Image (cartoon, rainbow, N blue to C red; front, side, top):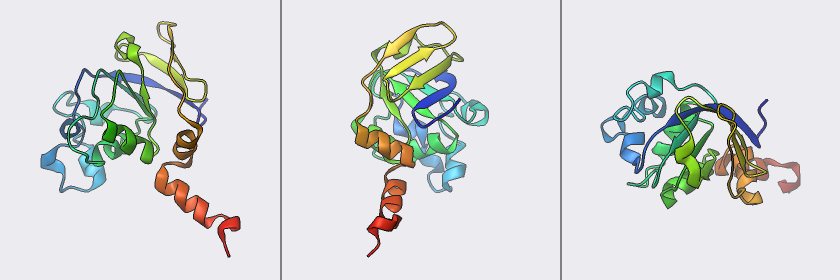
Length: 171
């Protein structure tokens, strides 16, 4: 069961201060987006880009996405099929880049309670996360409606394109 508000996936767990250079390594920045994505998190888990499956969820500690403002960090995760990122805290620019491309970024103080491989169910509209492996339930502040709408549209550019191509937007 997958709707824009409900996300189900397997947890990939990482620690604190996962920076944008780990997500989109500098040595691969000249490659196209898909090739760059194949290097995502290779310095932390060399198997991640090969083994992550569409719908999987990245779970991390504090300051996820610190470092440079490169939006390729969030894009790489999305291209690999990651459906959401849950972390104790996010770097502001990564958080906004993720939302702008339609990748939910969910701050959750209890992110450290989730183990690698756990099956997660995330309800964005209710602000609930259920670890289906352990039965634990966690609450997080639901995203504001305007950000939820942006994610449901596939990101800011997709939302703007749909808005400006809507029949009521035509002269």
